Image 1: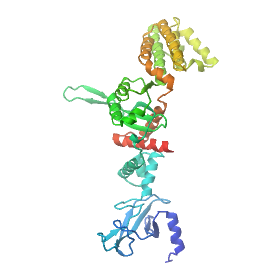
Image 2: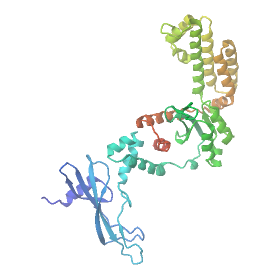
Image 3: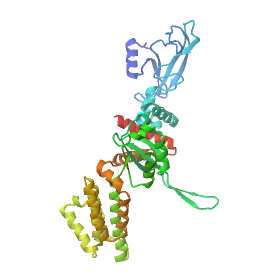
Length: 430
């Protein structure tokens, strides 16, 4: 057998690249399994007194879980127990430990870092990561919990100036039956995301989409933290507005323009559907221009090309003899104009014109839309002044949907929150 030389050992250590360890020998089993035997390259210090030890007491072999090196590798640590030579030290002996493998650890720190990066940076599922690194699901979950303690910032120490709040589904809708009454109850597991609009970082994920969850989260923040918040952007949710009035009474609240435009588009869609039932006694079909070009009705009028505007005019001529659909479409366009104004005076003038268009349309869909605008007028004024929207919250909700789809859903809300907060913190820091 050829004896290993010092150069070969140094080369193996450099290739293996495990800090504070040197490769002593390697072997390949009959089944092709590669085993790497390592030991520490420096004498350790006593964990109690810190004196460097020079005498070994015994040796044990400990298996370590480590990252794959050109394929699966079994790592065996030739681990020594050392004497403490300090006479006044109460510890007589101790087992060595390193930064990569602390006391009582059975895996290397670089393996835990790779597990966290695979889930957080690469977007892999926990189960997929565990299978790829040949470790248990519980180990990946423990690495994520450890990373949460080390990497997540203290929310109370931050000073966000603008917040955004919006909800998303945690799981699919479920139905539960009461054994006593045999009545079925629909349960929608919602969660609410709270985001710093300046940085885009997720600050909190709370249960439900009612005022209590958001209110409890805000109440847990220090008073100075709450006083520092200037603007909060929300969708037209009475529950969120109630929580903000309770715990952030001095903060300006802005309603998101996207949701208001969506309500205006919904009014156009409902009008088109109701007119089809009233005039033709059926749902829309492909032969009906109003149905064939239903998405064109929702387009912004100032973005229509000449060809698209001509098709829209054909819709009004063919399927809108009374001009009702055109009147509702004008209301929708006026809502967009109102939200695009740059001053409160222009907004007030646009609101007056909107009221006239609503009266001319005389439709329940536009009346309901106008009542919503009036009910949220203070928040619309804040939107016009500050321009605060929930765009970054929606972006985070999109990333959250990818997390859920990759993991095929979550059953544990705590695990769900930790992955969301970790990924947001890592991306914000990058």
